[in-house]
Length: 340
Ligand code: DAH
Image (cartoon, rainbow, N blue to C red; front, side, top):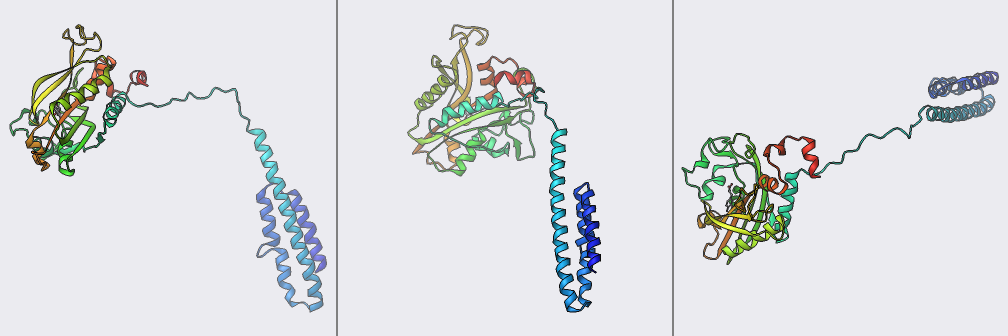
């Protein structure tokens, strides 16, 4: 039996020496020390031997087991480091190779303009709220005091999803949502996409963006409306900008107005940008109609308010001299990259 151990030792040592991979090492370990390995078998068969022999053989077999284990582990470490060396030699990095150009993203011009306008209002304490793109006919028309026969309700102007739901044609629906979900006083601004059945051309798109604003509080007058929107215009177009309010009609406000800003290209003298008038229309506004406040059960004896809505594309086009609205949606990098 002892001789047997010696021949196993020699065999194992030469196998380990010749092994060329981690897998070879593992195979040797299984063949010698695994459940049915040769050293294991000897340890198992020992039970039958007389105690004296068992003692000697057991000791020797365990020494051999340890020895083989150690040799295999050492070989494994050697092989692993050889493999690493080899890999490091093969995998060279060419540090002179030009790196791929890194393109850093930026906000789309529409998002930049929205952020700028929202910033002007949040600085004045307005809260930003958002509404869904699909809204009810009530929220986009009836709640806003729009007469049942108003032309904007027409299928040719508004995208109907069903009899009672539409793709919102303006952000004014958020006024109704806010009035129904909050108690006065409040002041909010709400940006987002709107949709109308318009054929695309240089100034029309079936999808566009608006920013809505609304304040409901005690003692709000037309003077607050003018002061607030004049402040916005100066921030947006420069401190020399003057504003002018022209009477207009909207079902949801009384009185209603459109606000013009003095042309920031010619300063008001008249040029191609303002079509010679010196003024550019940028938004609709007015004192919110009591019928609209009524939807939110606002105490109309106590509270008044104003609201406004403006087209984001129009403002971006004026501010950056863009002559076709379709550029915004074509994702042509040559256009987009100009406004990083
Ligand atoms: N909703 C109007 C539009 O889409 C814009 C507007 C005008 C909003 C007057 C208002 C407002 O809140 O008071 O043309």
